[in-house]
Length: 248
Ligand code: PXP
Image: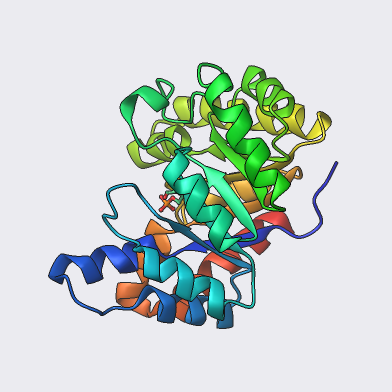
């Protein structure tokens, strides 16, 4: 299965990180979301963490109100967050680990170990019409579990691949990429929609964007970091162009 257009979800968490450094009202992540959409973002991603270290509850409400593109609500699979998502009704909810014990060794959500905990929460979100994705390591066995849990989407954690790119370790880059490729192909064959994200930069995005099974990338830190130098619209457009070049 080949996804036609690779969507770019822009994660605006770190605009809120800068705002919260002074505890005030600017820079406003909602303004950033507007600009990102004008510059070509296909969706906006925001992570309301349990400790509210960047995005606040009011940001999520405002994003839902103003956005004309899908809002992807990243959240821990807790009762508090599921309750908030059921009230907010975003387009999508991406379940992510926040605590050590929710993680696999590499960093994705431990959906095998947390199966019993996740199943009713995924069902509740799905029943409310919210598209659920699971942020997981790119492993074939994990794809089977995601399918069994009834999640229509998996987002593959690209952190290990991106670290290998930063380290300039070509052998590790190859190894991590082939892990991502195998998992994407396997998951897509199971009928899952495949997304990816975490740590992607202009330098590392190409080989991931090229994979035909991928439907969406969620990218935040590198875009917001680059925006300091070139402005947010251009940072979004440059990432979009790098994805399109890889896909062409
Ligand atoms: N996807 C998920 C599920 C994430 O948790 C994050 C990080 O918040 C991202 C994508 C974006 O990662 P980055 O900010 O490193 O681009």
